[in-house]
Image 1 (cartoon, rainbow, N blue to C red):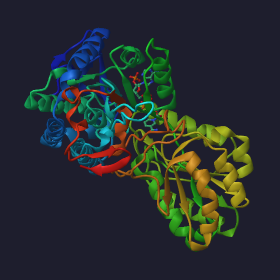
Image 2: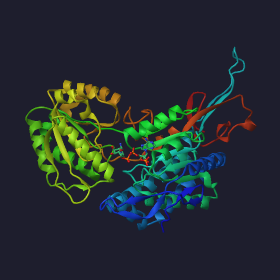
Image 3: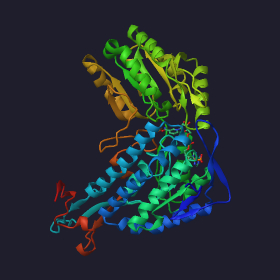
Image 4: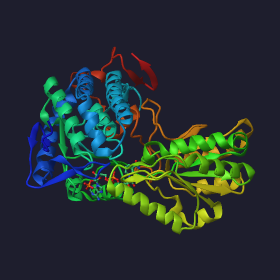
Length: 520
Ligand code: NAP
């Protein structure tokens, strides 16, 4: 049964003030009332995380991996209660949430394998050359956890990017304790998942400060958490304004810390002429499918489509209008997100974009899909048209030729993804465009659509600002662990004091020894 409490290092705490979760579809209040975490709760959670850090870091990697697997098992054991509560709070359909739960436990288990693999430690050994002039010392390096990480749960992934989502899984895998600031739109879902984490902590006999969950609706909570001196890094997914605010708080601390914020992207899609000519209608239907998936509430939504003007583009635009018309509007995550979506539509209209078509109306707080079209000239004159509007809206930009497509792309902000649709005769143009795409985006997609982010080793879900605050990183996939590590070098350290993984002799882990990579 839900309690409405925060979890501070193993203790479920109530509070002096409370807030209420709303059912996304009906807008009615959901029981129980949730305690607003206080400044004392933040301080206690951070102190407990700092106190637990050394013990957690020192765990054998096999135990750290077992902990991640235990979290996954306890989430699965929550059964339908979890998906039913998430459906109520977010309005997302059951199939989506069941899939998202699978992704959440899958990524915890993938990080468990990654922890055991050990390659992420970046182990390097450069043996001494004592006879050299000057003598070269013995140098050995490994990566160590940064320390307690503050994670901000995302509204649009109540499981896979919330309490035990990608940021938490990668931070725990790196050996960092975690304090989650739960998203106020799904506190019940968050409480259930926090219970699964606590059960795993107790099963493994870990210090309870390894994980805390704090909920609330006041920006002061997130600010206090980011400013707490014991927090060493931040993971965030949400709005550009929110991410920027947290970056500023982190940078203004006496000891600044890194913020890995995933914020805003319009994910340009380029339809190259030969492919557009041969498949205008099929592309239109797939585009509308990607755009309206999950009411467009994905950071990888195809928000801008660049097409070469002409008869094929006209066929594409007509087919988009036709494909869009029957798509019923879907419930949006929160009243605030719906309101921001509607303001975004009004702004695009005010900037003179031509409406290509809309989806069908829905009942309740739904976001009706919209597609607009503008010329490349008009797009250039109104930079605001290139900003993300979160929801099922997209703008088709008609360009005179490939050079104009390249120029529009080159002037765009950083993106999570960029997509090329092309046939073989388009490859020369694609080859010219690729360096621009590489400079702008973290993931380049060929003949696909940006929604759907696989959790794998090679995935990059990141990109230059404002896609993320630090384009050198990814928030999805095993490379995400890198965000919460830093290198430490041991010079001429006696073997008796070295970490085991850095001793000469067999380790079973990928290491770089005197410049050569080997698993020895
Ligand atoms: P949000 O407003 O950025 O909030 C995300 C989290 O950050 C919440 O826990 C929020 O808590 C906290 N927060 C926001 N601003 C803060 C500040 N100035 N100081 C401290 N904490 C702050 O995102 P949202 O509620 O999910 O949705 C709002 C908008 O974000 C959407 O309309 C959309 O534009 C964007 N969004 C983008 C993505 C994406 O993937 N790119 C995903 C989701 C949302 P409190 O509000 O309780 O303080």
